[in-house]
Structures are given as C-alpha cells and as structure tokens.
Amino acid sequence: MWRRLQTLFQRKFKISLLFLLLLALLVHLVMDFALPAAHKPCSCNTKAPKATGVPSGSPMLSGLKKLSLRILQDFSGSNSSLEKISQLQGAGLHARTGELWVQHQQEGGNAGRTKESKLATLFEHPLYNIPIPEVTEKDKLFVVNPMEKFSLRSSRSDEWVSSSKAETLLPTGKTAYDTYPTWLKFHVGINRYELYPRWDPLLPTLLQDLATQRIISSVQKSGGTQLKLIMTFPNYGQALFKPMKQTRDQETPVDFFYFSDFERHNAEIAAFHLDRILDFRRIPPVSGRLVNITKEIRDITTDKKLAKTFFISPAGNICFYGECSYYCSTEHALCGKPDQLEGSMAALLPDKTLAKRRSWRSPWRRSYHKSKKAEWELNPNYCARVRETPPYDRGHRLLDLIDMTILDFLMGNMDRHHYETFEKFGNDTFLLHLDNGRGFGTHSRDELSILAPLQQCCSIKKSTYLRLQLLATQPYRLSDLLREALATDPLAPILSEPHLRALDRRLGKVLVEVGHCLARAAHPDEVLVDDVGSWV
Image 1: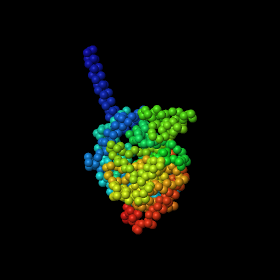
Image 2: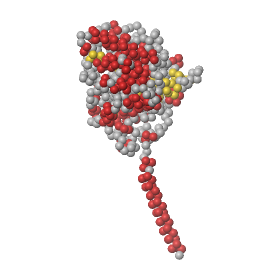
Image 3: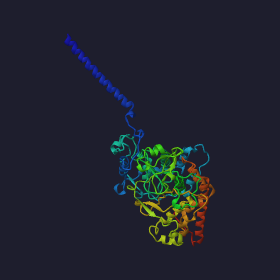
Image 4: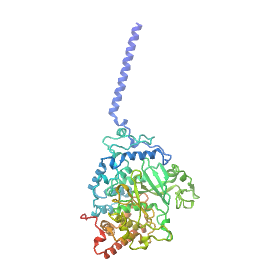
C-alpha cells in the first residue's frame, strides 16, 4: 500500500513539474510576441560613460581613425557611390530654396516672427540657383563603404561594432549612411566644387550639435599663435573652440600691427555666415557656444600643460591661459563669469591622414615685419608675374583667390598669409577659407590694401560681381542678410551695428574698384570672367 502511494505521488509530482515548465514556456512566448521591442537594444539611447578626459593617443581617438578608415575609402578602392547623399541633395532641389535654413531660424527662437525672410528670398534668386557641374565619383572627397555602419559596442566601450553586429542594433531598413553622425555626413558630402551644398539639410543639425553636444574632452590645439582647444563629443565628433578675448564693441587699437591683433570668436561665427551669403561655401560651419570652464575644460582635460594654467582671479572667476606664442600669460588670461565663457565652435575638417590638404602661400602675403613691405606693395605690375606662375597661370585659381580677397576686405581681415586645398582634387578645386578670427576687428576704417589682387589683376568672376551688385540693392542689403543669419546663433547678437553698417560701405568700395577696372578695359570680358553662361 505504501509503495503504491509513493509511486502515485511521484507521477503527480512529475506531471505538475512538466505542467509548470509548459506554462513558463507559454508565458515566455506570449511576452515575445506581445513586447518585441523590449528585447531590442537601442544604441541611440544608450548613455555614454562620464568622461574624465581623452588623451590624444587614447583608444577613443584611435578608434575614430580606424572607423573613418573603414567607412571612408579611397576612390581607387571602391566603386560604390554616395547614393544617400545624392538622394538628399536631389530632394533639396525640389524643396523651396532656403526653407530648411528658415526652419532652423524659427527653431532658434524666431518662431513668432511673421516678417518674410530676406535670406529665403535671396536663396530663391537665380544667381543662387546656378548649378555646379555634375559630381562624379572622382569629384568626391570620400567614397563610402556601404557595408560599414556606425555604432558603439556598448555604453562602456570605445570600440566599434562590426558590420554584421551593427545590423542587429538598428531598426529594419536603415542604411549604413543613416547610422553616421552629422559630422561624418558632413565629411562624406565634401566634393571638388563645394564644402557643403546650398540646400544642405544637415546644416541646421550640425550647427545645433556644435552648440549643444556634451563635451567629453578638451585639449589644447598645437601650433598657432593664440590659444585654441579641440573639443570632443560623445559621438566622436570634434570641434575647434576659440574663446572670447574681446567684447563686441571693442575695436583693434590703431597702433596694433595686423600680426599682433586678437583672434575674435565672433569673427569666426560671422565669417561662416558671410561666406555662405556670398555663395562661396568654403568655411566649415561655426556656431557660438557658452562653455563651462570648470566642467567642460578644467575637470576633463588630460592636457597637463593646459591644466597647470588654471587659477581663480581676485574677483572669484575661473581663469586659464594655456601655452601659445601670443597672449598666453596671467596678464592675458581667459576668465569666465564666474566660470561661463563664450567661444566659437567650428566643425573640424576630415583628419589629414584621411584627406590630405595642401597649404599654399598667398602671393599677396604681407611681410609680417614692422618696417619691411612685401613685393606686391612696391610693384603695381605684380599681378603680371603671378599670372605666369603655377597654379595661377591656368584655371580659376586666381579668380578664387580674388573671391577670398573680397571676403577678407568685407571683414577687414589682413591676416590671410596662407590658404589650403584638398590634395585629392589637384589645382581644379575651391580654396578653403580657414582661420578668420582676425576679421571684424575694426568698423571705423577700411583697409583698401586687402583688395590689392583685385586692383592689380582687374579680374573677377562674373557670378561674384553680379551677386555683389545684388547685395548692394535695398531688397537684398548685405547688412540685413547677415543680421538675420546671425540672429539664429546661440550667442546673438554676434556683431555690433557699426560692423554691419561697415559691410555695406565696404561692399560699395569693392564695386567702385571693379568699376575702375571696367572703365580702363577695352572689353568688359577682360574684367568679368564669364562663369555663368546662359544660366543668368
């Protein structure tokens, strides 16, 4: 009897255990079908670890180069194209010109404004719709590896997920391009003819990133005459930070030499927007930003030389001065209020190991001497020699340099000693207008010697001349356009009204110089080099 009860109990126990296992399996299956999203990790919401600074040789930065090398392949190594970028640019052609930029302005605090945007009207003008040549594979700075996706392994890792593993971290239908952060999309969009397109949907997002992305590393940039910092973001993007050294209403003292002038953060911001209004698009995007010296520089820097220069001023403000050739001393320290400091954040160009750049000495470089003059200042026929010297003896290089000269004159920038180009494109490409911090230093006087290339060569692109004429008219007044563009910046107002009025005055002087050239020329074509054809 006892043996029979024992056997019965064992059977019931096994049946009960089996039933419980089946029930657990059923519940698990129901949860899988009902809540599929709960088991899919989303890398976009993963919190990055709190950084304590990233040295230049850290795994983070080396990982960035490794990923970039995988994603950005040389043209000779791949036949793939930037299909996604072409789609974005093509879509922009069908959109209302300037619409995305106006939307960005509204998001920046102008949503209540009902007045029509002059910028939007400008970008609808035929002169701002002249197409660039067709961009072929060889005209792209990078060719994207379509199989390489961008994703962090985890919140505690600086390594990258391989293509196969990244597939499981992304929503269905995402392409490799969709996984790239905005700074990387900016890099792969660069081509022979422009740094970024007129209708670039990425531009508002990139400017927003520069102004708001969390800073996880701050180190001093080597080289240069004044203090600059390289800021790193959690998405591996980087920006060049130039701190505020002067208030907006301060002018460069008349006794200062051009090579000892301060570099101004607001000049970098204004130069980017002015360059875009002139339709050059040769300056990387720049945004203003208010930086916390304590949390976003001092506490996270791994730069020992920089770290030694922090101190608290008698007023209780946090200050630092770094190491550089000019103005890096206790007497010229950068101080917060008490630790808040304005500055410009410029998107960095691709690393030179990935996209080599060539530096060119400007033929109209100044002597950078207190008493000596450069040859072009003594020889009025200097341009004839330049025209016979490569790369100015063919193509549009000289005309591009004159474009840059006009930009510099409008800003009052006398410090254009070099310019750069992307080596891949040879001599047939645009000039990079970098390092504009010594612009907008004075509004009460105009330095006509900056226009020497235009005065001596008496040549200008027809498209540039026509746009300058347009910007001198009441509906498209240059000062109004730049005022509107700068109103979107987080640090607005960027320029004082006297600087904006000086732009209109200087624009008039550029047109007068071209008028003098036209009056002396036998035919207008000798001065106005046609680059628009039948488009205008």
